[in-house]
Amino acid sequence: QVQFVESGGGLVQPGGSLRLSCAASGSIGSFAAMAWYRQAPGKQRELVARIPNGGFINYLDSVKGRFTIRRDDAKNTVTLQMNSLKAEDTAVYYCNKHPPPAAGGYWGQGTQVIVSS
Image (tube, rainbow, N blue to C red; front, side):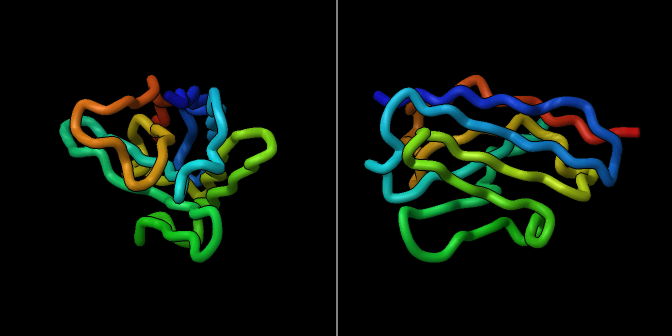
């Protein structure tokens, strides 16, 4: 199965920026869409941004205008540019295919984002 390695997280002040990267071990072109998800402490994992092979890109309402997802099928990478970060963006961020795996399916280690002054 294709595995994902997320990177680029860290501690940033409110209003700051981070760029997350996801490297896939195989072709992402075989998936209908790729996505970034996040899971905040005590909360369920949620979809942040979704980018299909073609068609419209979707964003969680709370990140629209601040986050930008991109994919490079030649390099099998997906990135998430995050600007104007807020405390509520604090979470572990994961990339995976979309629709996401079924319960018990594969997820990478994720990358921690902490937005705090």
